[in-house]
Amino acid sequence: MRRMNEARPIRPDIGAGRLAPEALADNFSDIHPPLEAHEALVEADRCYFCYDAPCMTACPTAIDIPLFIRKIQTGNPTGAAQTILSSNILGGMCARVCPTETLCEEVCVREVGEGKPVKIGLLQRFATDHLMEKGGHPFVRAEPTGKRVAVVGAGPAGLSCAHRLALHGHEVTLYDAREKPGGLNEYGIAAYKATEGFAQREVDFVLSIGGITLETGRALGRDIHLADLRRDFDAVFLGLGLAGVNALGAEGETSTGSADAVAWIADLRQTTDLASLPVGRRVVVIGGGMTAVDAAVQARALGAEEVTIAYRRGQDAMNASAYEQEIAQTRGVHIRCHLQPRRILTQGGHVSGIELERTTVEDGRLVGTGEIVTIEADQVFKAIGQSFLPDGLASEDAGVVLERGRIRVDAERRSSLDRVWAGGDCIAEGEDLTVVAVEDGKVAAESIHAVLSAQQGLGARIADAVSGAVEALSPGRM
Ligand code: SF4
Image (cartoon, rainbow, N blue to C red; front, side):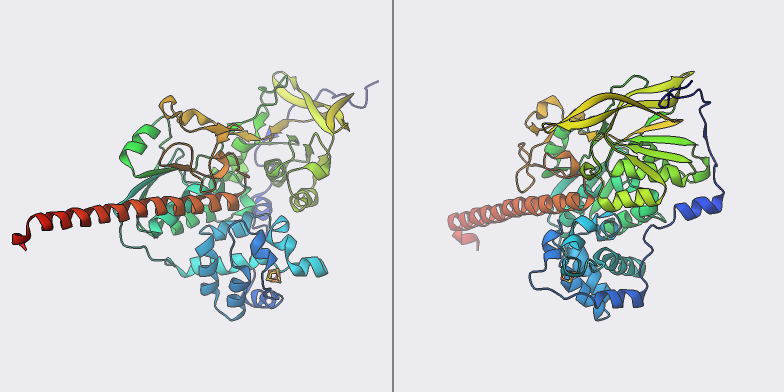
């Protein structure tokens, strides 16, 4: 007799085209269809335009939410978008991917009082979509300053920093290791959150301010080097993201069918034909964060029949928000908690299941109970976190001090190395949120601008003093 938790021999089944094109199109359609104009007006009418609005305080980029909602209410969506974008130039993407239920909408007085917040995210999307569809750029660059800044990484932090620097009149060269700019927005989030090429349209919008030269396929430490950038530019911003993925360290991890969720999501985002992407019938995702949910929901959307998220702690400890968990569950993903991976089972070198151990918490510590659970699977995705790879920071730049494995910065996002700033996921305080990365880029850009302006001011004062001295020495030449 077979034990209940024992994997029976199965033939691994990973295949493409499990669903008809219409079903795939439906499954990957926009998860939050945008508001119509009349819906936006009705929703804007629900706002109390609070003084000291808590929603604004909760926004990492401090968007003036009551002001932009007031502008929508008075029929001025373009002005509303300008208000949003003046604080957060990636306001369009943030309207799509921000966990608003744990930020602005969580503290909205309508949520606190009635359990139904103003739909701030959807209103933000309404305004920013309106402006982007209209075309043009809402801001005008200052006069060129003659200062040059290198921004490494064209993800949310780098784009935000580059835009703000260009706005102040500085000349920016924006490098990225990948072939396309956008970072996580382009490669790392679920396809149904940013449909119809929105990530690239937003990059084009950001760059349309002018003064930014984009160089893709240029990796720090391989094609460009920090020492050279420091020599050739007036300042450097590092928005390097997290290139490393954590390993399970479990037997069977390298078998066919075992994959890293981040790389799989990137492949999915770049494919032009969803039907060509292979997916298992039974999929297990290890992890409890947003990446685990994005991988699991998309595996279901591609046609996987059984998808399970296995997480080692309780559901309330998952990094994925309650709302993200609800999306997973309403789309047919089973979330099983208190299970930690022991080994990946294989047949003929291919994943056939995963063996997990039940866990419990004793004296605040997570411990295994020794009870083993086996789940049959054709495909296992690991989504147990990413890490910063400091490979691009050559030894001669050891001045870039790391803290908890990431770059240490001060409140202005200055690293410990002179004229080098950093922001986004690669810094010690990084929160792995797009909106936080955007704020990092903005804060760093303002700090860089202050330093470069002071240099210019000093330069002008020295020039004035020199010219005054020359005049004093040569009065007859006037
Ligand atoms: Fe409007 Fe809610 Fe913000 Fe108050 S807290 S300003 S009601 S969105």
